[in-house]
Amino acid sequence: MTAGERVISTREVINEALRDEMRRDSSVILLGEDVSGGAGREAEGQADAWGGAFAEYKGLSSEFGPERVLDTPISEIGYLGAAVGAAATGLRPVAELMFVDFIGVCLDPVMNQAAFMRYMFGGRTSVPLTLITHIGAGIGMAAQHSKMLYSFFTHIPGLKVVVPSSPYHAKGLLTAAIRDDDPVVFCLHKLLLGRQEHVPEEPYEFPIGRARIAREGKDLTLIGAALTTATCMAAAEALAGDGIDAEVIDLLSLSPLDEETVLSSARRTGRVVVVDEGFPRCGLAADVASLVADQAFDDLDAPVKKVTAPHAPIPFSRPLEMAFMPSAAKVREVALELF
Image (cartoon, rainbow, N blue to C red; front, side, top):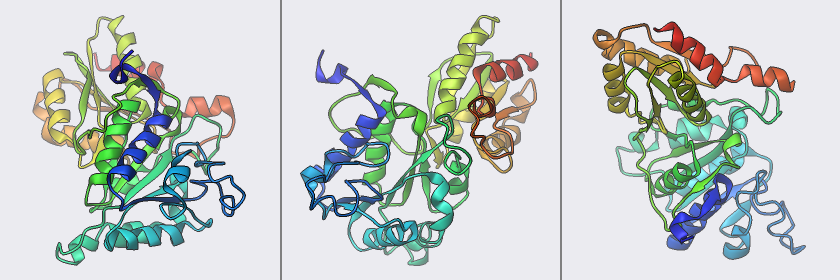
């Protein structure tokens, strides 16, 4: 097996992309809670005891030291404010918000500072900040650690928002995010961390703002992001047994959104189902469905449908949590209604 054919997990490609960029550019730093070993562990010889809550950063502290891999206090507004300031003054910080649910205690530096600084300074400054955060349900972490909230960031002009669906796209999008001169929110679904596939060893970028056609089809368009791309793929396989040839669009980037790919597919197939694990009100599915209904209405053969989580807190109960998340069976059921 050559280096280009190796199989590697999403967790490992996050580490690899960061390592590559930190070696390439000395201005890239990493900061967050427990991204190394926890406060004081360097003195105990345990600099890589944690490597983050999901062990994505193990080994980085040993190579780059505590000045570039910074364990922070449990004060999200403190270290995110510091990251925004560092980005505005010459560094390229990668800041980890352990769970997207924590954005409520540190919103101001992201929404009011990072997002608007370039605009308010007349383009005379940039904020090359990458915010890595974990999204999604499925591992029993209940309502306060399982939300999606990528739609929330997408709502704010000035922020770029990416949502990888696989190890390959995680590596390419993270590399692109770190190199970007604007703030990028990198939303990583927790259930994707262990997914494995062939990923090139050399650094590469996947363009921010470009979706992909994960599966070609002619009868129906299924649109997903992050984990729901796999849900759409499973639903498409099931629909093939019903004689329906479904196309699957993997959004990958929510802001900017690849409207051309979405609309082109919708016009070609005439039927669209948008699948979103996020809350339904003012969410991703509603936004994409509105886009299709507004700009491709004359080419549609049926109403645009949405499959989302319910407008409710994520349950801790395992059976209820699984029922909460969109499933391939539910997508198939809704798709069949369009025929």
